[in-house]
Amino acid sequence: MLKRTNYIDWDEYFMGVAILSAKRSKDPGTQVGACIVTPDKRIVGVGYNGLPAGCSDDDFPWNRDGDFLENKYAYVCHAELNAILNSTKNLKSCTIYVDLFPCNECAKSIIQSGISEVVYLSDKYSNSDSNIASKKLLNAAGIKLRQLEPKFDELTLNFRKNN
Image (cartoon, rainbow, N blue to C red; front, side, top):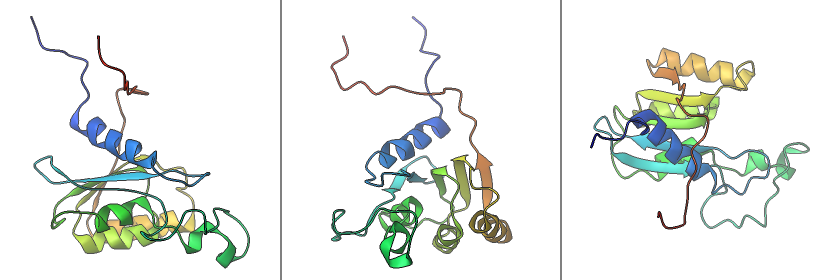
């Protein structure tokens, strides 16, 4: 018998962990996940966009528009920051997998943490000022940027026992 050939590679595996983490987000508009990995392929941090620990998801707004104090941007921590803060070790030379290209604020945290590579799926805000500033910062810091081109469009998780 030969080994399976339709298994996912490391990039797809770690991006899958990021996407699965995003499923924890309570944000009705945007769910983002992040997964931080050491050079020897060990996961050392995961996160998703949500409110800081101890703040109820029911007590803060989830709107995108309106006054600053009445929308989510004043209160939500992004997936990248949460993954960094949830990390279990020094992040020097690590890779962060994120399903949406990081904003400029997250870029600062990525740089300061010592992460050396950003692997992302979507760059849908590529023309925004935040995204342009993010790329400028990440490039200036020598962070490798790589858009993942997965072999699979989707993977299914089955929680029922395999037969």
